[in-house]
Length: 187
Image 1 (cartoon, one colour):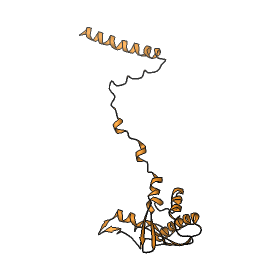
Image 2 (cartoon, rainbow, N blue to C red):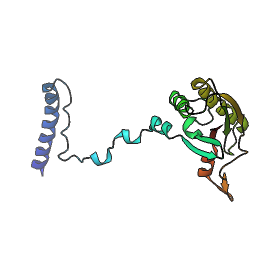
Image 3 (spheres, rainbow, N blue to C red):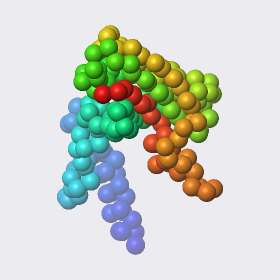
């Protein structure tokens, strides 16, 4: 038994004695650990961030729907694409696209620009927000077509095109369709 303890103590002493010497041979730095023999691959979990980037330019192209009501053409602009939440500021690509949308309006025509919101309360009032958004669109139209006569109105949530609720349940799709700016003109 004494022989076993002596061998163990000798091994411990050797480790303590070799430790500083091993550090001295390596410039005093602790050697880096060996990498594991098998590294799992995670390429299947890595994906291109490009797939998740919101393509604002593409969506600006698809921001409107056109309908005809008798002699009146109605261009409905999706406010969710045009404006940030609670904002009335248009991006430069949105202004450019709005200018393109009115290029075929007859010379000197009267154009009505009507803003609409959903029924979610806004701290300054939905009537105010809808009017400011309609005015921002009218300003973009005026910059592109100064010959047009513009009439601007904000209707808040008073003229929904879809129900904001289905019974007691919220209707997010309906509310999204109600957040819009309409451009109306004869032609």
